[in-house]
Amino acid sequence: MAQTSQLRIPGPTPVPDRVNRAMAAPMINHRGPEFKALLPELEAGLKWAFQTENDMLIFPASGTGGLESTVANLVSPGERVLAVTIGAFGDRFADLAEAFGAQVIRYAPPWGEAADPQDLDDLLSKEPEIATVLITHNETSTGVTNRLQALAEVVKRRQRLLVVDGVSSIGSIDLPVDRWGVDVAITASQKGWMLPPGVTMLSVSKAAWQRQAKARAPRFYFDWERAQKLQAKGMTFTTPAMSILFGLRESLTMMREEGLSTIFQRHLRIAAGFRAAGRALGLRLLAADPETASPTVTALYFPAALSGEKSEAVFKTWRDQGLVVGEGQGKLAGKIFRIGHLGAVHDDDVVATVEVLERGLEANGHPVTRGAALTAARRALESSEPSLVA
Ligand SMILES: Cc1ncc(COP(=O)(O)O)c(C=O)c1O
Image (cartoon, rainbow, N blue to C red):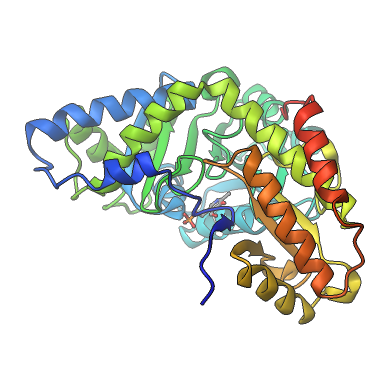
């Protein structure tokens, strides 16, 4: 089997050596003094990255666990919930709320598009009973980033609780939780945090705590109240994912060294580089509007001649050259591929990936002008003045 030297899926993402070394530290007592010192340090670092004063909760689970904890703590059976879904992960959040007995109303623009704040406003004006709105910030299945600031403004003006799936955005794309009034923001370790999967992290506002106290869905593993009480004592309810938390301390240090705004700009620049390369390769972007093209995932259509089953051969050629990119999900399977570029991804990585993408497409009969994609990517990396998606 060819070795993967370039893991370009939208999570898990590459783990830097520094973080790997930190994770190799010996186990400690998770009810002892060292862990009591570690936990507040992680909470403070996460608050910095989430740009919030809200409480932070940390659970051993993947991102879906963080989403499920939110529904279990906030949504009561029979309650009307609005799910703004622009792809597979938005659908998952809606399905999850339904599984907990909520009456879910779906606002679902076509895949490839972002949600429209005006449509959201119209919907909420007609649905006064909806108390909670679920929104995906960055839809990983389509490579589209919602205009969250504008959507949040609508939700807040209409005085509803705002829950944001920031699994593939927080720490990579600007999401100032407090400034935008996000009540619950959820992420997961294997994305921009440069860690293996296994930890979900979320912020909870005062309004969300008030709702939590009244909500009636069953909860146990993910009971926020118990989690919060124990975290205040420097502990977690269950055994924590210790090694990943050791790694989180290091990745937060790396993030502080780079600075949040530099990290956001880097992701915007790299995404611009991949989009320019895709265009130069003659490929169509799934993200219909460049303003909402994701800074962390770029989804590109296969050319018609390589679509469907033939795409398997292209993925194999790339894999044989050490490059692994994401496949299309659900109805996009066989139609698109997704380049994940979040976390520890730098300009040189764009160049290395584009070289293999070009060779693989050419080897499978797609006409390319050799080197054009690289030139386009380099130009975009050097000159891009990316607009911040809001
Ligand atoms: C936007 C988004 N939401 C939710 C999830 C689910 O996270 P997990 O696979 O960690 O459960 C993902 C994972 O890719 C995601 O990208």
